[in-house]
Amino acid sequence: MGRKWFNIKDKKAAKDKSNSRVYAKFGVEIYMAAKSGDPDPTTNQKLHFVIEKAKTYNVPKHIIDRAIEKAKGAGDEQFQELRYEGFGPNGSMIIVDAVTNNVNRTASDIRAAYSKNGGNMGVTGSVSYLFDNTAIIGLPNGDPDEILEILMEADLDVKDVLEEDGHVIIYGEPNEFYALQEALKEKGYTEFTLGEIQMIPQNEVTLTGDDLEKFEKLIDVLEDNEDVQEIYHNVNLDEE
Image (cartoon, rainbow, N blue to C red; front, side, top):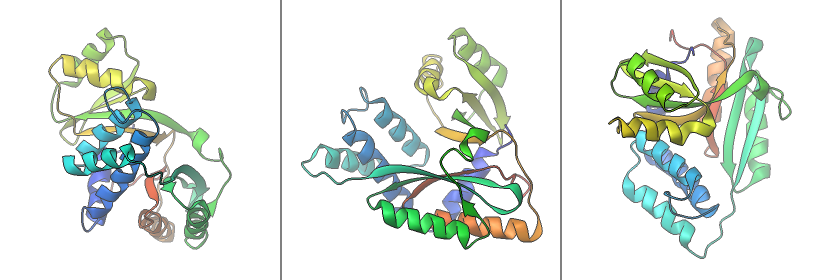
């Protein structure tokens, strides 16, 4: 698949000088998921997914519970999920997923981030068709061949099972995310170090020199935006 997920995760965590930003972003995401349906993760699959993802980032239980309790209350804070697609230097492509309570502010900030750092924002669909929406599940240990056999016996459509950085990484269809987890739990694999649905590029590009510097600055500016939840791109940063 060409992406070192734990390296990427570690870099993202290192950029957050405290855990408060991570917790705040998950708090909003959990609140939205709970508000969109039943605030019970056993019956609300979207909420279940967000909570499982939060656990892999070590978000404390009290943060999760507080967001759910807030969603149960009478308040009606309005957030919207938005996706921005655009282009960086020399063939790089970037997708930004944001959650905001002020669409005009967020759109203006994201557009400025692109334009001031060697990129430009495109229209909806200009980039995403070159990415594949993929469920990614990480296990701290295990035999990839054995895990693949377990998932195939469960009649699940698995794209790949690889060993990366000492972890086993499963790539599957996003609509089978929960089924993949349940099949693994039934066979005793109950600890997950990664549980996300990501946009994976079909092809990657390598940047050097000024192009790489501009790209990294653009990503830094986007990541510093409090409304930004996820950033996907097609630049190979494995060798950094």
